[in-house]
Image (cartoon, rainbow, N blue to C red; front, side, top):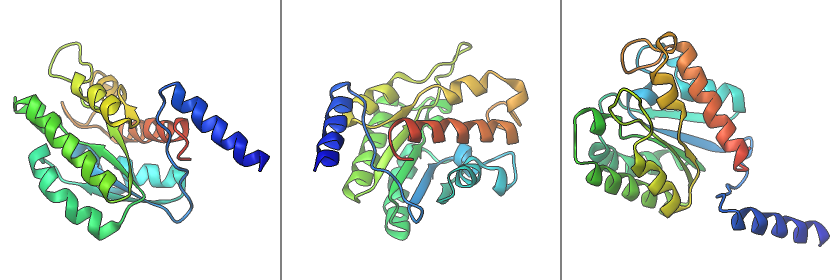
Length: 199
């Protein structure tokens, strides 16, 4: 009884601080890594993509559902099938880069991502969001990612992609990462999951 009360108090305290908490994953949990080429792992072998490295670090199944070149409009169309196929406990949503590179209307990009988050929640899975930077010399995350995270009350990894994009020794080309870069993405996402109680 006392342990339950303490757990409830902890959740309430963390919620009061505005920090969205995740339910802890188990050894048989399934994580769906959903995104574009940065999820697929363009530039490296499949076992060096960030979902594979994250699976190694966490010791659970992480499904790589990345499609190179995908826009958020295409991702929104594809997501329901992936959710049905894998029945994930948690989804890492990492999209928007192609919309930004192609100068799409970012209001629509935000709406597409918001719809994806809603679909994930409706499926019963938890969701975390990974931000992609704007097109600029001093890259920082596009502001709609933080807006979405706040509005949807979900964890956000805001800085890792913007940071790595500036480091030539972390990239295989101007946009994609190398082995060290994808490993850094995996570490950052693992730390985000730890920080929000998933592991």
